[in-house]
Length: 145
Image (cartoon, rainbow, N blue to C red; front, side, top):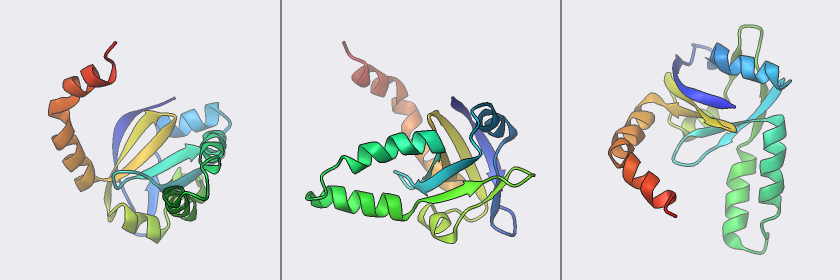
């Protein structure tokens, strides 16, 4: 559903323009609102409402008697917020999420099938540079028969 890599900037009011191609996908799927939360590896995760509900069911199934499950759910759900695009396709990211992802101005928006990730440009570059040379090796390990 979501694919590609897009470079954008946060404006002076803290808003991020969602790329037009991704906004079209939201419209095609009747997704008027979506959820942003703390992601893994220092980025933000963005889900449509339908995908958020699927993820929520998985995480609610984790046993609250396990400390790791409690810790994860606390950070994941307490960081979540519901957002909608304004008429110009902008969303306001809460300051606490921008701080978590080290986002100040320049961001990279990455489509990953069922979710979108928002990265600070510097963190994305670090991730990409450290991962690109092992891409084929990783594929071989993950998809061994």
